[in-house]
Image 1 (cartoon, rainbow, N blue to C red):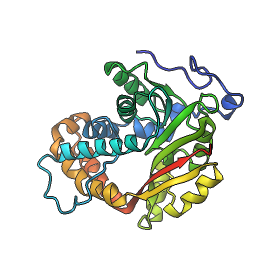
Image 2 (image 1 turned 180 degrees about the horizontal axis):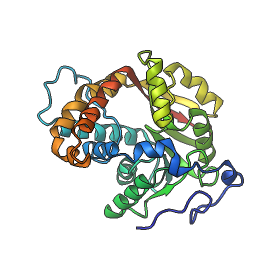
Image 3 (image 1 turned 90 degrees about the vertical axis):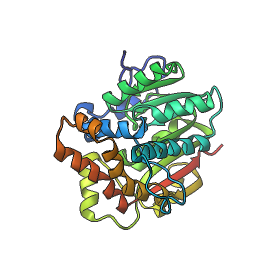
Length: 301
């Protein structure tokens, strides 16, 4: 399986003056790469069916009895969140769409299947890029969905290349303002950009924020910061929805049970390290203090 060329050398992609000068991060030492290439993210890939994001639960999730299969519940919630984003995308058949921070390609492939569009996904993780390419190939969608090892702040595409795009749980690693500026550059007039973001809803301690910055470059905004940020970076705000009650909180409540449901498989990923498994199962609890936001915005026509 071939690997996409690095930024500045992507086959078939017109280069833009100045892109190479903005530069590609040092991939081998980047904290975000290290974070996403851990065994924990292979386990999350297993639990979410290749989505590697949080889930979207029904409004009455608190009133439901515990699911018969917690792992299947988590995977379905992750798929439901993907379907929500696909439904809100406005890309048409044959149009180009950019997935900025594409992970292992699950949402991009779902979009291609539903909309019959063409997706270019970018990630700075070599492992994720290889996995995404392999999944597209297995699905028979390698021509419609292409995945590149590239820097989200120096995208290897010409200005106004895409009719739509999204940051699906990725922008908080990149620096919101520069990531939006670069996305604005490659989107066409009238294009809709979607993003989901973990946000500071007033329950995070300063220690928690600092730990997230040091671990994987996470920068938390508040919901109130978004309107001005989007205006300053050249976007028109279309929709701003706080989904904390249907995403972050149920994930925090149900994640440990999902891990227990597939304990043997996850323990094998962790090389039978019981302490590591216990730490992984406890990850969900941290999301009880984190908000979750869905944003839709548009490049002015």
